[in-house]
Image 1 (cartoon, rainbow, N blue to C red):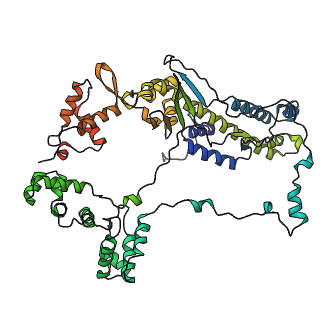
Image 2: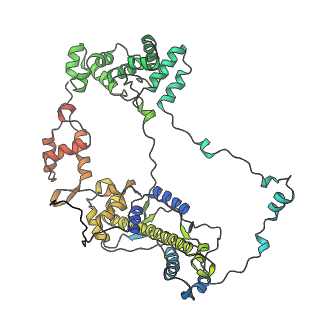
Length: 529
């Protein structure tokens, strides 16, 4: 009898599963300002019951208009009644929301005070029923006569003038290939060599180096060896100097040649003794070249000013656009925390779809189910956006209370702070705080910082106090910058100096911090005279 056979089994298990509403709340919380704006615009397109609050005086549903529906609950399904009540509640909640918090400096750190509440939607509501509008006032008689009664005539205001797209006014980034081809187009070259130079330009990497062999490029483009070598020489004569090189040595030599330094001390060092420069053996260089130490130092300084990646200026990433999500300013003795809500669409519910929830309006069950689903989704989104704002404000309140000295006096007064501590103070899970600060920036009197910048581990400092890891790294970097280049500090010496000042740290930790900051070792920093 086989022990393997298909069977059906029933078992009971408990699992934690996130509902779609919670998933959306987590997703909205970790969005920054630009991402939130894009998401809201996408939701407005996908959900017909959502619309942006404008100042055009659009009609909004009033309690009096809802009253006939509320007085006949037997004609409305329970789920529809819940939607109607929820829509009223969400509008009222949006009107009393706060995007600004004021912290008084005289209060203890444990106490929270929120003032200066700014309404999100300042649209006034009135209990009076609006007067019926005259239907004739809604007719544009000018457009009617222009478009219908006299088809052969159009007033200047009614003409539709095609305007150029806004994208035509935007500047496109200049790539390395475009920059080289523009110079190649005005060079005096034969058609064969120009075509070979185009092939070489197409094979350059983002740093401006030619990584493919000349034989392979010649075979791929159908060029002779003489043509491809002449084309390479033409490309290497273009700006920026050093482009088209096949290794670092050739790149530096091309730059020295463009500065009329061919055959000089710097040229000889790069051509034959570049390894001695890497190990900083200046005394050995002086002996090999038979030059005074002063000449060697001048040549090495000239070599350091050369660009080892000439093409990166055109191929590197563009400037990163950062818009602060929060503003922290000081007004007298109070710190004011304000969300940056500019250009973020303020949402409201479209009142035209509410009548589709009533059977008496002739809506079928499928229509009512669809509208109810859309309203539920819209309400959930508006609640999650409000929840995101309140969570970020609470986290920023905790940061301001703990980093008041930093905000007032600068980076040297930054205090260690853990995500877990802020989560306990706010009353949420640490993962919620981590999502609330992810990818978001804050504008402070000391500059624009990422919210994660304020969270740093503590290292045992003087008198048992904690020193932020960021400040410790800055201190190690400052020690190395002020060291004697002939006798650079070792990791053991830096550790002893830190321990003398009361900071308890090990040599391995110092070495790790130095490597994180990409600072060379003691042997590589030593300059031998």
